[in-house]
Structures are given as C-alpha cells and as structure tokens.
Image 1 (cartoon, one colour):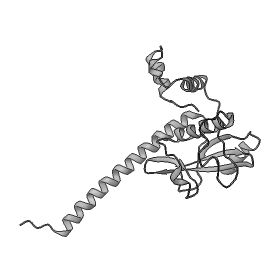
Image 2 (cartoon, rainbow, N blue to C red):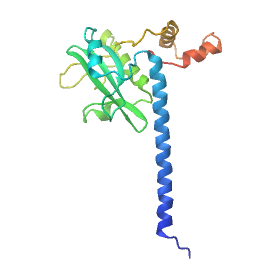
Image 3 (cartoon, one colour):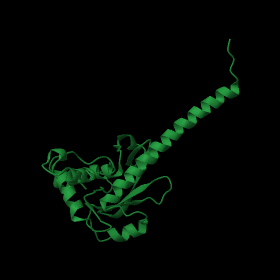
Image 4 (cartoon, rainbow, N blue to C red):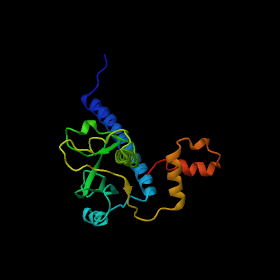
Amino acid sequence: MTCHSTDSTETAENERRSESESRVVDTDRNRIAAAMKDLKKTGWYWGTLTANEAKEILQDAAEGTFLLRDSSQRDYLFTISAMTSAGPTNLRIEYKEGKFKLDSVVLVKPKLKQFDSVVHLVEHYVLLSRTSCKGSGGEPPGPSLAPPNGAVQLLLTTPVYAAMPSLQHLCRISINKVTRRVQDLPLPNRLKDYLTDYAYHV
C-alpha cells in the first residue's frame, strides 16, 4: 500500500497548473507580438493616439474612413476609430483565449467572428463594408456593422495612414488582392517572401 501526503499531491497539482498557465501566457505573448508585427507594417496603425486625437484626424473624412490605435481602456489592447454618418466613433477590439474580435453588446457577441490577428479582423470587415457599399449582392455586413436597432451603420472602407506607405508595400497589397497563390507567380523567391510577409488586402 502506497501513501501520498496531501502536501506533495497539492504541490504536484500546483506545479501542473503553473506550467499550464505559463504555456497560455507564452502563447498569448507570442500571438500579441505577431499581431503587433503585422500592425506595424500596415501604415494605418497609429499606436498611442488618444480618442480626441483620432476624432480630430477623422473629423472631415468621408464615411468609412478608419484608423487603428492602442486602446485607452486597460481591458482592451486596440480600438478602431472610424467615421460614420453621425461622426467619428470608436470600436474596441477584444482579445480572449488567443483570438481577436470586435467588442459589442452581450447578445451579439456569440455571433461575432474571431481572428488570429488584428489585421485579419480589420481586413474581414473592410471587405464586408466594400462589398456592402458596392451593392453587389455579396455577403451582408456582420452584426457589428449593421446594428439591429436602426442605429448608425459602421463601415470600414478607407484606412488613414500615419505615414505614407512605401510603393513596394502598396504594390504588395495590390498583388495580394489579385491572388492568394503568390508561390505560383514567376518571381524571384526573395520577392515572394516579401509578398507573403504581409498577405493582406488592406
């Protein structure tokens, strides 16, 4: 008959729990670091911009113009500031369990899509908004873009750049809009690597 002390059992459980929590923290840290790396390439990530500064930048912009900045609220990492028909507004981005999604009312939250990166999230809603604006009979805007209570519709169509992006970057976006099969293009490997390093449409 083997007898284990309660202390040793609790210690083993605590060590396992600590290892598991450490893995989660490392995963979160890596996911957020990767998100930041992509964001810094976009040109429309403004960093520590305040809500008032974002409002001033968007004040005379067309509806659908947007930028992304750090959130001023401690529970959130990022905020999208966008121009609506009623003026500038802010929409926070939530990070939970390794995924990014738009913050919204509790009833809508389960319907909102989740993404591995912030740029992918923004790209998704930009494509939805542009399809909606064209009226091409494509997929309708998601619940966060067209509130059910008749409130102002949020469109994301045109990013505001913090600094003018390079011609190479703009070309990369244009090529990625046309094809997802960059590896099949008759280009040098170094150029393919550059194209796939930022494989987004916005």
